[in-house]
Length: 242
Image (cartoon, rainbow, N blue to C red; front, side, top):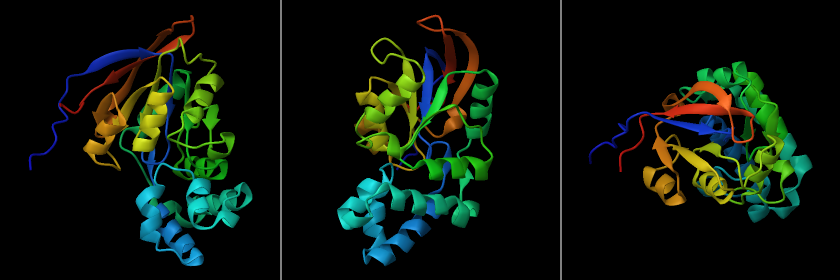
């Protein structure tokens, strides 16, 4: 089978803000998460591979509700997720291109944020362990009633950026089908990263662009957005040719 062709020419687009998923998009903590769910699966008496088959991109509270509703509460979930970076921090790596892109966004004071299915202790723990730029805007699992693919998380992210979803142009960067669907349902354009899922899954979820990783997304410069705010001019390159 021929390798996918990530050879699309560079495209420059302007957005009023960018919202990133975390795991699989900014960092790859796959090995850590596998170890985590193996530990939890053993405690629950559930095959961890069954849990792992559907857990990526979803909130742990939603996953746990399927196996032991008594543990599907924020006190427990925040505790177990807060332990992951502490216990398995050495197992995580940054997604290629993440560090320079996030640093450039911070340096430009661009409007950006993180919208994750993880809890706040998990998100802050990973950003501290990886020593990556942390935006002022965060949306975490506890902030919404329903997790991805429900669009509430990305709508809240836009609201925290001071943007109106009906008139603002927002870019979402995701790796999971559930997150891509959430971004699209929130009215955003979505870059799908081919880091954790198959191309067919990203395409079926509705990604507007599919690229290998964040090396294909670069900040060009700041400017004026639709409402006179600073816009984010982004170059998207190496897009999958359909």
